[in-house]
Length: 427
Image (cartoon, rainbow, N blue to C red; front, side, top):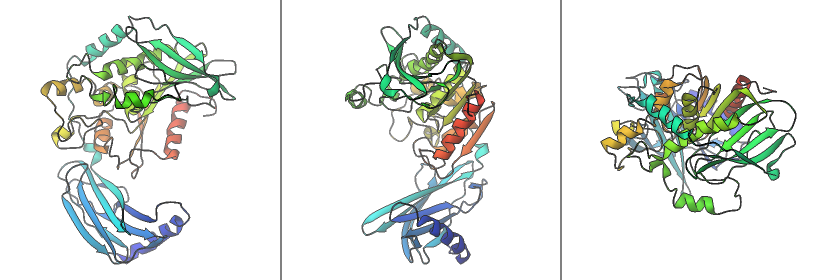
Protein backbone atom coordinates (compact mmCIF):
# COMPACT_ATOMS: atom_id res chain seq x y z
CA UNK A 1 0.00 0.00 0.00
CA UNK A 2 1.26 3.46 -0.84
CA UNK A 3 0.14 6.77 0.62
CA UNK A 4 0.09 9.89 -1.54
CA UNK A 5 -0.23 13.21 0.25
CA UNK A 6 -1.27 15.08 -2.86
CA UNK A 7 -4.54 13.18 -2.76
CA UNK A 8 -5.33 14.75 0.61
CA UNK A 9 -6.47 17.98 -0.98
CA UNK A 10 -9.26 16.07 -2.70
CA UNK A 11 -10.06 14.00 0.35
CA UNK A 12 -10.26 17.04 2.62
CA UNK A 13 -12.67 18.72 0.23
CA UNK A 14 -14.86 15.62 0.45
CA UNK A 15 -14.52 15.81 4.23
CA UNK A 16 -15.84 19.34 4.32
CA UNK A 17 -18.95 18.28 2.42
CA UNK A 18 -19.44 15.17 4.53
CA UNK A 19 -19.57 17.12 7.78
CA UNK A 20 -23.05 18.41 6.97
CA UNK A 21 -24.44 14.96 6.13
CA UNK A 22 -26.20 12.76 8.67
CA UNK A 23 -24.54 9.37 8.48
CA UNK A 24 -22.66 6.81 10.54
CA UNK A 25 -20.01 8.06 12.94
CA UNK A 26 -17.29 6.45 10.82
CA UNK A 27 -17.27 7.02 7.08
CA UNK A 28 -15.16 4.82 4.84
CA UNK A 29 -14.69 6.23 1.36
CA UNK A 30 -13.50 3.72 -1.22
CA UNK A 31 -13.24 3.89 -4.99
CA UNK A 32 -11.03 2.64 -7.80
CA UNK A 33 -8.10 4.92 -8.58
CA UNK A 34 -9.32 4.98 -12.18
CA UNK A 35 -11.67 7.94 -12.67
CA UNK A 36 -13.80 5.83 -15.01
CA UNK A 37 -13.98 2.82 -12.65
CA UNK A 38 -12.58 0.83 -15.58
CA UNK A 39 -9.42 -1.18 -16.16
CA UNK A 40 -8.25 -3.45 -18.94
CA UNK A 41 -7.59 -7.17 -18.84
CA UNK A 42 -4.10 -7.67 -17.41
CA UNK A 43 -4.07 -4.24 -15.73
CA UNK A 44 -3.97 -4.12 -11.94
CA UNK A 45 -7.06 -2.55 -10.39
CA UNK A 46 -5.98 -0.28 -7.52
CA UNK A 47 -8.25 1.45 -5.01
CA UNK A 48 -8.30 4.60 -2.87
CA UNK A 49 -9.33 4.30 0.77
CA UNK A 50 -9.91 6.99 3.39
CA UNK A 51 -11.32 6.72 6.92
CA UNK A 52 -13.22 9.66 8.44
CA UNK A 53 -14.48 10.33 11.95
CA UNK A 54 -16.35 13.54 12.70
CA UNK A 55 -15.50 14.66 9.17
CA UNK A 56 -11.72 14.34 9.62
CA UNK A 57 -9.26 11.70 8.50
CA UNK A 58 -8.42 9.14 11.19
CA UNK A 59 -4.67 9.06 11.75
CA UNK A 60 -3.04 5.63 11.93
CA UNK A 61 -6.30 3.94 10.99
CA UNK A 62 -5.95 0.16 11.12
CA UNK A 63 -8.02 -1.51 8.41
CA UNK A 64 -8.76 -5.03 7.30
CA UNK A 65 -9.46 -5.56 3.63
CA UNK A 66 -10.09 -8.25 1.05
CA UNK A 67 -9.79 -8.14 -2.72
CA UNK A 68 -11.56 -10.66 -4.92
CA UNK A 69 -13.31 -11.18 -8.17
CA UNK A 70 -16.95 -10.23 -7.74
CA UNK A 71 -18.55 -12.54 -5.14
CA UNK A 72 -15.71 -15.05 -5.33
CA UNK A 73 -13.31 -16.12 -2.57
CA UNK A 74 -10.72 -13.42 -1.63
CA UNK A 75 -7.39 -13.47 -3.43
CA UNK A 76 -5.90 -10.93 -1.01
CA UNK A 77 -6.74 -10.58 2.68
CA UNK A 78 -4.67 -8.17 4.78
CA UNK A 79 -4.54 -5.91 7.82
CA UNK A 80 -2.68 -2.62 7.38
CA UNK A 81 -2.41 0.85 8.81
CA UNK A 82 -3.17 4.14 7.09
CA UNK A 83 -0.75 6.64 8.63
CA UNK A 84 -2.62 9.67 7.33
CA UNK A 85 -6.03 8.02 7.24
CA UNK A 86 -5.77 7.74 3.48
CA UNK A 87 -4.00 5.30 1.21
CA UNK A 88 -3.93 3.43 -2.07
CA UNK A 89 -4.40 -0.31 -2.00
CA UNK A 90 -2.81 -2.39 -4.71
CA UNK A 91 -5.37 -4.71 -6.18
CA UNK A 92 -5.29 -7.59 -8.63
CA UNK A 93 -5.31 -8.00 -12.39
CA UNK A 94 -7.74 -10.28 -14.20
CA UNK A 95 -6.91 -12.33 -17.26
CA UNK A 96 -10.48 -12.06 -18.52
CA UNK A 97 -13.27 -9.45 -18.43
CA UNK A 98 -15.11 -9.14 -15.12
CA UNK A 99 -15.16 -7.18 -11.87
CA UNK A 100 -12.70 -6.74 -8.99
CA UNK A 101 -14.07 -5.90 -5.56
CA UNK A 102 -12.41 -4.34 -2.52
CA UNK A 103 -14.10 -4.66 0.89
CA UNK A 104 -12.71 -2.59 3.77
CA UNK A 105 -13.47 -3.02 7.50
CA UNK A 106 -12.55 -0.57 10.24
CA UNK A 107 -13.27 -1.05 13.94
CA UNK A 108 -14.03 1.81 16.31
CA UNK A 109 -14.94 1.22 19.97
CA UNK A 110 -15.92 -2.37 19.29
CA UNK A 111 -18.12 -1.61 16.29
CA UNK A 112 -17.08 -2.63 12.78
CA UNK A 113 -17.75 -0.31 9.86
CA UNK A 114 -17.48 -1.53 6.26
CA UNK A 115 -17.60 -0.30 2.71
CA UNK A 116 -17.05 -1.73 -0.74
CA UNK A 117 -15.84 -0.57 -4.13
CA UNK A 118 -15.91 -2.48 -7.40
CA UNK A 119 -13.91 -1.89 -10.58
CA UNK A 120 -14.87 -3.09 -14.04
CA UNK A 121 -12.43 -4.98 -16.23
CA UNK A 122 -13.19 -4.63 -19.96
CA UNK A 123 -16.87 -4.89 -19.08
CA UNK A 124 -18.05 -4.45 -22.66
CA UNK A 125 -16.41 -7.80 -23.40
CA UNK A 126 -18.17 -9.80 -20.66
CA UNK A 127 -19.97 -12.69 -22.32
CA UNK A 128 -22.88 -14.71 -21.02
CA UNK A 129 -22.79 -18.42 -20.24
CA UNK A 130 -26.47 -18.85 -21.13
CA UNK A 131 -27.35 -20.97 -24.15
CA UNK A 132 -30.51 -20.51 -26.20
CA UNK A 133 -32.84 -23.55 -26.39
CA UNK A 134 -33.76 -24.43 -29.97
CA UNK A 135 -37.48 -24.38 -29.20
CA UNK A 136 -37.41 -21.23 -27.03
CA UNK A 137 -39.79 -19.27 -29.28
CA UNK A 138 -42.25 -22.10 -29.81
CA UNK A 139 -42.30 -22.87 -26.08
CA UNK A 140 -43.27 -19.32 -25.14
CA UNK A 141 -45.66 -18.82 -28.06
CA UNK A 142 -47.56 -21.91 -26.93
CA UNK A 143 -47.48 -20.80 -23.29
CA UNK A 144 -49.10 -17.48 -24.20
CA UNK A 145 -51.69 -19.15 -26.45
CA UNK A 146 -52.59 -21.53 -23.64
CA UNK A 147 -52.90 -18.67 -21.14
CA UNK A 148 -55.27 -16.84 -23.48
CA UNK A 149 -57.60 -19.83 -23.78
CA UNK A 150 -59.08 -18.75 -20.45
CA UNK A 151 -61.23 -15.64 -20.68
CA UNK A 152 -59.70 -12.65 -18.91
CA UNK A 153 -62.99 -11.66 -17.23
CA UNK A 154 -61.50 -8.46 -15.76
CA UNK A 155 -63.01 -7.02 -12.60
CA UNK A 156 -62.42 -3.59 -11.05
CA UNK A 157 -63.40 -2.59 -7.52
CA UNK A 158 -63.07 1.01 -6.37
CA UNK A 159 -60.41 1.63 -3.74
CA UNK A 160 -61.16 5.21 -2.64
CA UNK A 161 -58.62 5.22 0.19
CA UNK A 162 -55.88 5.19 -2.47
CA UNK A 163 -57.40 7.98 -4.59
CA UNK A 164 -55.51 11.21 -5.20
CA UNK A 165 -56.57 14.63 -6.46
CA UNK A 166 -55.72 13.50 -10.00
CA UNK A 167 -56.38 9.75 -10.10
CA UNK A 168 -58.96 7.17 -9.11
CA UNK A 169 -57.78 3.88 -7.60
CA UNK A 170 -59.13 0.39 -8.23
CA UNK A 171 -58.31 -3.05 -6.90
CA UNK A 172 -58.42 -5.27 -9.99
CA UNK A 173 -58.27 -8.92 -10.83
CA UNK A 174 -58.33 -11.04 -13.95
CA UNK A 175 -58.38 -14.76 -14.63
CA UNK A 176 -55.06 -16.50 -15.06
CA UNK A 177 -55.42 -20.24 -14.97
CA UNK A 178 -58.26 -22.43 -13.78
CA UNK A 179 -59.81 -20.84 -10.70
CA UNK A 180 -56.74 -18.62 -10.35
CA UNK A 181 -56.29 -14.88 -10.62
CA UNK A 182 -53.82 -12.03 -10.88
CA UNK A 183 -54.51 -8.99 -8.70
CA UNK A 184 -53.26 -5.42 -8.86
CA UNK A 185 -53.83 -1.74 -8.15
CA UNK A 186 -55.00 0.36 -11.09
CA UNK A 187 -54.74 4.16 -11.14
CA UNK A 188 -56.80 6.01 -13.77
CA UNK A 189 -56.77 9.80 -14.36
CA UNK A 190 -59.99 11.55 -13.31
CA UNK A 191 -60.05 14.00 -16.16
CA UNK A 192 -61.62 13.27 -19.51
CA UNK A 193 -59.62 11.86 -22.39
CA UNK A 194 -57.39 8.92 -23.16
CA UNK A 195 -53.95 8.33 -21.72
CA UNK A 196 -50.75 6.30 -22.05
CA UNK A 197 -50.29 3.36 -19.69
CA UNK A 198 -47.47 1.87 -17.67
CA UNK A 199 -47.30 -1.61 -16.16
CA UNK A 200 -45.31 -1.90 -12.91
CA UNK A 201 -44.04 -5.43 -12.32
CA UNK A 202 -42.90 -6.39 -8.81
CA UNK A 203 -39.63 -7.13 -7.13
CA UNK A 204 -39.27 -10.41 -5.29
CA UNK A 205 -41.32 -11.07 -2.19
CA UNK A 206 -44.91 -11.23 -0.99
CA UNK A 207 -46.57 -7.93 -0.09
CA UNK A 208 -49.53 -5.59 -0.60
CA UNK A 209 -49.47 -2.73 -3.11
CA UNK A 210 -50.76 0.81 -2.97
CA UNK A 211 -50.64 2.04 -6.55
CA UNK A 212 -48.06 4.27 -8.18
CA UNK A 213 -47.73 7.27 -10.51
CA UNK A 214 -50.58 8.76 -8.50
CA UNK A 215 -50.03 12.35 -9.59
CA UNK A 216 -49.32 11.73 -13.28
CA UNK A 217 -51.59 11.80 -16.32
CA UNK A 218 -51.03 8.12 -16.99
CA UNK A 219 -52.89 4.86 -16.44
CA UNK A 220 -50.79 2.82 -14.02
CA UNK A 221 -51.21 -0.87 -13.24
CA UNK A 222 -49.16 -2.35 -10.40
CA UNK A 223 -49.56 -6.13 -10.20
CA UNK A 224 -48.72 -8.89 -7.77
CA UNK A 225 -47.67 -12.27 -9.14
CA UNK A 226 -48.81 -14.74 -6.48
CA UNK A 227 -52.54 -14.94 -7.14
CA UNK A 228 -53.63 -13.28 -3.89
CA UNK A 229 -55.36 -9.92 -3.35
CA UNK A 230 -52.90 -7.05 -2.95
CA UNK A 231 -55.06 -4.75 -0.80
CA UNK A 232 -55.16 -6.69 2.49
CA UNK A 233 -53.23 -3.91 4.18
CA UNK A 234 -53.67 -4.97 7.81
CA UNK A 235 -53.39 -8.69 7.21
CA UNK A 236 -50.64 -11.09 8.28
CA UNK A 237 -51.28 -13.20 5.18
CA UNK A 238 -48.32 -11.84 3.22
CA UNK A 239 -45.75 -12.62 5.90
CA UNK A 240 -47.36 -15.99 6.58
CA UNK A 241 -47.17 -16.95 2.90
CA UNK A 242 -43.66 -15.56 2.58
CA UNK A 243 -42.49 -17.85 5.38
CA UNK A 244 -44.80 -20.71 4.40
CA UNK A 245 -46.25 -21.79 1.06
CA UNK A 246 -44.36 -19.15 -0.94
CA UNK A 247 -41.01 -19.58 0.81
CA UNK A 248 -38.34 -19.44 -1.89
CA UNK A 249 -41.03 -19.70 -4.55
CA UNK A 250 -38.39 -18.86 -7.15
CA UNK A 251 -36.96 -22.38 -6.80
CA UNK A 252 -40.35 -24.08 -7.02
CA UNK A 253 -40.45 -26.93 -9.60
CA UNK A 254 -37.27 -25.84 -11.31
CA UNK A 255 -36.82 -29.34 -12.70
CA UNK A 256 -39.86 -29.03 -15.01
CA UNK A 257 -40.05 -26.25 -17.60
CA UNK A 258 -43.86 -26.49 -17.72
CA UNK A 259 -44.30 -26.41 -13.94
CA UNK A 260 -41.58 -23.94 -12.89
CA UNK A 261 -43.08 -21.08 -10.85
CA UNK A 262 -42.04 -18.37 -13.27
CA UNK A 263 -43.94 -19.82 -16.22
CA UNK A 264 -47.20 -18.61 -14.72
CA UNK A 265 -45.54 -15.32 -13.77
CA UNK A 266 -44.13 -14.55 -17.22
CA UNK A 267 -47.42 -15.26 -18.96
CA UNK A 268 -49.27 -13.24 -16.30
CA UNK A 269 -47.29 -10.18 -17.36
CA UNK A 270 -48.52 -10.59 -20.93
CA UNK A 271 -52.06 -11.00 -19.66
CA UNK A 272 -51.62 -7.79 -17.67
CA UNK A 273 -50.96 -6.06 -21.00
CA UNK A 274 -54.19 -7.64 -22.25
CA UNK A 275 -55.95 -6.20 -19.21
CA UNK A 276 -54.63 -2.69 -19.84
CA UNK A 277 -56.14 -2.86 -23.32
CA UNK A 278 -59.57 -3.32 -21.71
CA UNK A 279 -59.32 -0.06 -19.72
CA UNK A 280 -61.62 2.53 -21.31
CA UNK A 281 -59.29 5.50 -20.95
CA UNK A 282 -56.21 3.76 -22.37
CA UNK A 283 -55.18 5.44 -25.63
CA UNK A 284 -54.51 2.02 -27.17
CA UNK A 285 -51.02 2.94 -28.35
CA UNK A 286 -48.52 4.19 -25.78
CA UNK A 287 -47.55 1.52 -23.27
CA UNK A 288 -44.49 0.97 -21.08
CA UNK A 289 -43.28 -1.54 -18.49
CA UNK A 290 -40.97 -0.90 -15.55
CA UNK A 291 -39.62 -2.60 -12.43
CA UNK A 292 -36.54 -3.36 -10.37
CA UNK A 293 -34.70 -6.56 -9.42
CA UNK A 294 -37.20 -9.38 -10.12
CA UNK A 295 -39.31 -6.57 -11.59
CA UNK A 296 -36.40 -5.54 -13.81
CA UNK A 297 -36.29 -9.09 -15.13
CA UNK A 298 -40.06 -9.19 -15.67
CA UNK A 299 -39.84 -5.85 -17.48
CA UNK A 300 -37.48 -7.26 -20.10
CA UNK A 301 -39.36 -10.56 -20.34
CA UNK A 302 -42.71 -8.83 -20.89
CA UNK A 303 -41.43 -6.62 -23.68
CA UNK A 304 -39.66 -9.53 -25.37
CA UNK A 305 -42.88 -11.59 -25.32
CA UNK A 306 -45.29 -8.78 -26.27
CA UNK A 307 -44.52 -6.34 -29.07
CA UNK A 308 -47.29 -3.99 -27.90
CA UNK A 309 -44.82 -2.64 -25.33
CA UNK A 310 -43.26 0.59 -26.63
CA UNK A 311 -40.57 1.25 -24.02
CA UNK A 312 -39.16 -0.18 -20.80
CA UNK A 313 -37.16 0.93 -17.77
CA UNK A 314 -35.40 -1.93 -15.97
CA UNK A 315 -33.47 -1.37 -12.76
CA UNK A 316 -30.82 -3.90 -11.61
CA UNK A 317 -32.62 -6.82 -13.32
CA UNK A 318 -32.50 -10.26 -11.70
CA UNK A 319 -32.63 -13.73 -13.33
CA UNK A 320 -29.79 -12.82 -15.71
CA UNK A 321 -26.98 -15.18 -16.70
CA UNK A 322 -28.08 -17.72 -14.12
CA UNK A 323 -25.27 -20.14 -14.96
CA UNK A 324 -22.57 -17.71 -13.86
CA UNK A 325 -21.75 -19.33 -10.52
CA UNK A 326 -21.63 -22.75 -12.19
CA UNK A 327 -18.85 -21.35 -14.38
CA UNK A 328 -16.79 -19.53 -11.78
CA UNK A 329 -18.35 -16.07 -12.12
CA UNK A 330 -21.12 -14.29 -10.23
CA UNK A 331 -24.53 -15.27 -11.61
CA UNK A 332 -27.89 -13.56 -11.35
CA UNK A 333 -30.44 -13.77 -8.55
CA UNK A 334 -31.75 -16.16 -7.26
CA UNK A 335 -28.17 -17.43 -7.41
CA UNK A 336 -29.29 -20.97 -8.10
CA UNK A 337 -25.84 -22.44 -8.74
CA UNK A 338 -23.99 -20.80 -5.87
CA UNK A 339 -22.08 -23.05 -3.47
CA UNK A 340 -24.20 -25.97 -2.27
CA UNK A 341 -27.24 -25.59 -4.52
CA UNK A 342 -28.35 -28.99 -5.80
CA UNK A 343 -28.39 -28.43 -9.55
CA UNK A 344 -28.90 -31.16 -12.11
CA UNK A 345 -28.57 -31.16 -15.91
CA UNK A 346 -32.38 -31.01 -16.05
CA UNK A 347 -32.49 -27.87 -13.90
CA UNK A 348 -29.79 -26.25 -16.02
CA UNK A 349 -31.83 -26.89 -19.14
CA UNK A 350 -35.03 -25.56 -17.58
CA UNK A 351 -33.46 -22.30 -16.40
CA UNK A 352 -32.44 -21.45 -19.96
CA UNK A 353 -36.11 -20.98 -20.85
CA UNK A 354 -36.38 -18.41 -18.05
CA UNK A 355 -32.99 -16.70 -18.12
CA UNK A 356 -33.42 -13.01 -18.96
CA UNK A 357 -30.38 -13.22 -21.24
CA UNK A 358 -32.41 -15.20 -23.77
CA UNK A 359 -35.25 -12.67 -23.65
CA UNK A 360 -32.74 -9.85 -24.09
CA UNK A 361 -31.53 -11.56 -27.25
CA UNK A 362 -35.08 -11.35 -28.61
CA UNK A 363 -35.86 -7.85 -27.37
CA UNK A 364 -36.67 -5.12 -29.91
CA UNK A 365 -38.09 -2.56 -27.50
CA UNK A 366 -36.09 0.58 -26.56
CA UNK A 367 -35.04 0.57 -22.93
CA UNK A 368 -33.51 2.48 -20.04
CA UNK A 369 -31.33 0.37 -17.75
CA UNK A 370 -29.68 1.25 -14.44
CA UNK A 371 -27.58 -0.73 -11.97
CA UNK A 372 -24.65 -0.45 -9.57
CA UNK A 373 -21.32 -2.22 -9.43
CA UNK A 374 -21.65 -3.06 -5.70
CA UNK A 375 -24.87 -5.06 -6.03
CA UNK A 376 -24.62 -8.23 -3.94
CA UNK A 377 -28.08 -9.50 -4.92
CA UNK A 378 -28.08 -9.05 -8.69
CA UNK A 379 -24.35 -9.03 -9.46
CA UNK A 380 -22.95 -6.55 -11.95
CA UNK A 381 -21.39 -9.42 -13.94
CA UNK A 382 -24.79 -10.97 -14.59
CA UNK A 383 -26.44 -7.69 -15.58
CA UNK A 384 -23.54 -6.58 -17.77
CA UNK A 385 -23.45 -9.93 -19.57
CA UNK A 386 -27.17 -9.56 -20.31
CA UNK A 387 -26.84 -5.96 -21.49
CA UNK A 388 -24.02 -6.96 -23.82
CA UNK A 389 -26.48 -9.29 -25.59
CA UNK A 390 -28.97 -6.51 -26.33
CA UNK A 391 -29.39 -5.43 -29.94
CA UNK A 392 -32.26 -3.06 -29.21
CA UNK A 393 -31.88 0.64 -28.43
CA UNK A 394 -30.56 1.09 -24.90
CA UNK A 395 -29.73 3.88 -22.50
CA UNK A 396 -27.57 2.57 -19.65
CA UNK A 397 -26.97 4.46 -16.41
CA UNK A 398 -24.31 2.93 -14.15
CA UNK A 399 -24.32 4.29 -10.59
CA UNK A 400 -20.92 2.82 -9.83
CA UNK A 401 -21.12 2.82 -6.03
CA UNK A 402 -24.76 1.73 -5.79
CA UNK A 403 -25.63 -1.73 -4.50
CA UNK A 404 -29.09 -3.33 -4.61
CA UNK A 405 -30.71 0.10 -4.63
CA UNK A 406 -30.67 3.13 -6.85
CA UNK A 407 -30.23 6.86 -6.30
CA UNK A 408 -33.52 8.80 -6.48
CA UNK A 409 -31.99 11.02 -9.17
CA UNK A 410 -31.32 8.01 -11.39
CA UNK A 411 -34.81 6.62 -10.77
CA UNK A 412 -36.27 9.97 -11.75
CA UNK A 413 -34.09 10.08 -14.85
CA UNK A 414 -35.41 6.66 -15.86
CA UNK A 415 -39.00 7.69 -15.23
CA UNK A 416 -38.55 10.87 -17.25
CA UNK A 417 -37.01 8.89 -20.12
CA UNK A 418 -39.82 6.32 -20.03
CA UNK A 419 -42.72 8.76 -19.70
CA UNK A 420 -41.33 11.00 -22.41
CA UNK A 421 -41.15 7.97 -24.70
CA UNK A 422 -44.82 7.08 -24.20
CA UNK A 423 -45.92 10.74 -24.36
CA UNK A 424 -47.10 11.28 -20.78
CA UNK A 425 -48.16 14.90 -20.32
CA UNK A 426 -45.57 16.92 -18.41
CA UNK A 427 -42.60 14.79 -19.47
